[in-house]
Length: 182
Image (cartoon, rainbow, N blue to C red; front, side, top):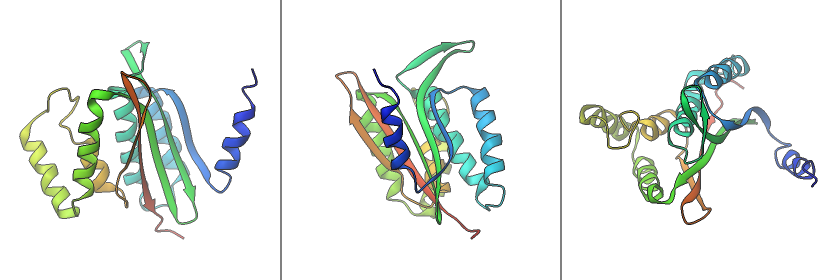
């Protein structure tokens, strides 16, 4: 089995991008801390560093808490997924992907569609409404992750779902940030 052949195709696919962070595996708090340091040093001249980092954390925490694929660790278990931060000309692209249960797909897609239809003022009001409403069923927080991502990025949230089997689908969330320092 040649496991190296596909890597060249990946290399060609991203040759016009500068990959700042690329990780596939179990996401833990330790990994988040390490990547935070890498991102902040890689983007030190960018004015949107804090926003990019905040969205990176939200996407990574979605993997950590909600991935249907888990690996046991010292804290119980960690969600498995992939997260990539790339730079190209005047944009930073941030994407994450992980397995989700098929029964949660429509809810996730609906939330992305809802926040994508809102302007910044509507997102702010919706954010406040969620904070006042308390924690939704099955959520590890106040259900703010998708809303926070939408408030911080410069693009709609691109939500792509690839059906895997009768139990799971692969969820990809992608956003971009326009560079301000050229």
